[in-house]
Length: 116
Image 1 (spheres, one colour):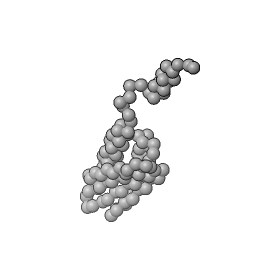
Image 2 (tube, one colour):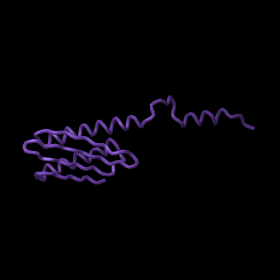
Image 3 (cartoon, one colour):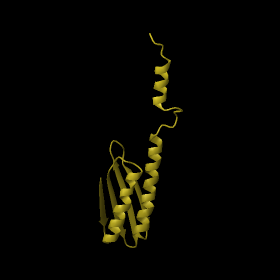
C-alpha cells in the first residue's frame, strides 16, 4: 500500500508529514483492500484544505475533504470523515439478514437426506 502526501502552495514540516503517514496507514484497520492513499494539502492564505482519496481494489474510490486553519486538525477531520465512509461501506457489504451461517444450513440438509 502506498501513501502519497502532496502539498500545494506551501511546505509541510517533516514531523507533520510523518504524522499524516502514520494516521493514514491506520485506514487499513477498517478496510483491508486499500491499495493507495493520496493526501493533498492545499494552502490558501490562512486556510488549509485537506483532501484524502483512498483507492481500493475492485471497489470505487473514497474521497473526503475539509477546510480549516490548522494543518493537523484539518487532516484529522477529513480522516474522520474517511473512516465513517469506509465503515458505512463495509457495513453495507456485510449480509446481516442470515439467521444461521451457510455452513449450518448445508450440514442440516446433508443430515436429513435418507440413506439408500
